[in-house]
Image (tube, rainbow, N blue to C red; front, side):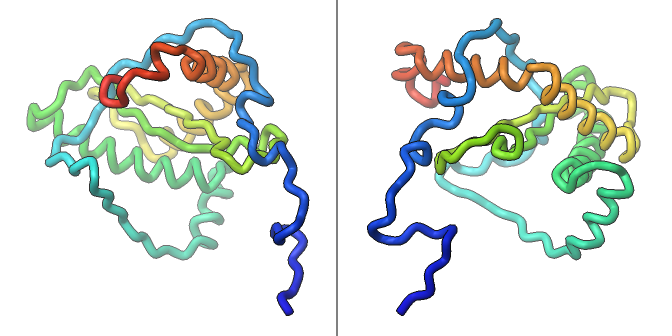
Amino acid sequence: SIARIDICKHPGDPIDDAEWKCGYRSIFSSVGPRLKMFSPAYIPKSKMIPVDKYYSTRIIMNIEIVQILAKKMHVTLNVYMSAIYVYALQKMFIEDIKNKITKPNIPIRMQITVNLRKYYPSKTLKNFSYVYSPSFHSGNTIYSFQEIIKHISDHLRHERHTGYLEKQIARNLRLERNIFFKFTPLFVK
């Protein structure tokens, strides 16, 4: 006999309809102001990966030590790890400017995925996340690791508490309902 685990569904158990509904539509409105599009950001020059290929990098680290470092900076592990990535990306950006491979007036932008279930109660089993996109206009300024952490943390806090997140999701919901956008081929989007 199989041991019963309460958090797992078993054959014959009732299924909550909320698990199959769109968490965005059930919590957020599609009404809201128009938002401006982001300007193009820095993309390191390299050979493009074919669309049918995916590469991953495996990093082995002691998570307890990284969590301690993040706590010392008063940020989440997500913010700390994103700052490490941006710090490395900034070094590449500065090198590309020196070698005249890229222009200094474009921003460095990082996309940070956050699970919205922490902030909005939802039982949906579908995707229910948001992507924050903090930008850095580095150019001739080199940010320290601490400045990058502060900028990312402030950006996430600003979007979370000023209603920008809700406006962005409202925009996405409007686009989802737009018939023209719905049937536009993916390569055009």
